[in-house]
Amino acid sequence: MEKTGWAVPNTMRSAGAKKDQQSDTGPAPQESHGGLVTSDRLNLGARALKAGLRTTVALCLVTTLAHVVLVFLHVAPANTVSKRYTPAINAWVYPYFEQNWRLFAPDPDSVNRQILVRTAHTGTDGSVEVSSWFDLTAVDNSAVEHNPFPSHTTQNLMRRAWTSYTETHGGDDKARTERAVMIQKYLTNIATDRVAAHTSGPFDFIQLRVVTQTIPAPGAVTSGSPRTPAETRLLPWWKVTTHGN
Image (tube, rainbow, N blue to C red; front, side, top):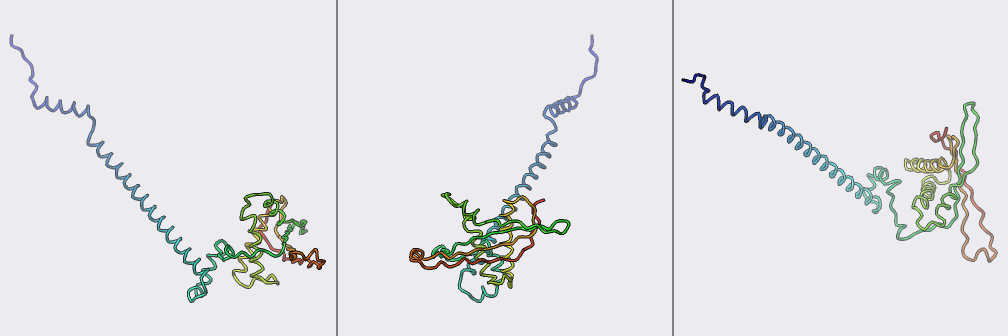
């Protein structure tokens, strides 16, 4: 008996085999395209990161170079360049990068100085409430006493601020230069932050009082020499940002 039926062409068998093979391995061309896109994004991100790093390094180098040049002009003897760019040099150096030779030739204080501060607050009814005097120097001294590693801030911040104030204002408390205005603001901010840390009440004005007592020479007290009277300097009231509630 003769068998009948349709014969499957070889071309159809080959196509079916190829189709089955593609279904097993998946859409390879599409996966390859997705991989290329991801790789391009990674490369773009790496290039952006490198560019940002180079820019940051370049800015740091330029800032460091400018800092070195400005500080050098500040400590160097007066010359044509430093005289011409004095405002820019002072604006960069003071008050944080001030340089002097006291590290190698120290000039210790020959006086005992006590810096006190009091505050004032104006009420809604127009009345003014003035606080009692608060001893800033006593707070610094208590932090230094019996401390084997006292901080530079505790030892010198208030003292250097006051020294700079007397150098720029003289004895009449008038700021005649931009640096004098800056130093006055600097001293005001220090006193305000110190008293705000130890006071809970609100205030919007502060006033400083500085009592200076000369340290007698060795043997002067025992020899009966009269002690120099203390000098008291009362500064004007300064308006500050309101603190407290």
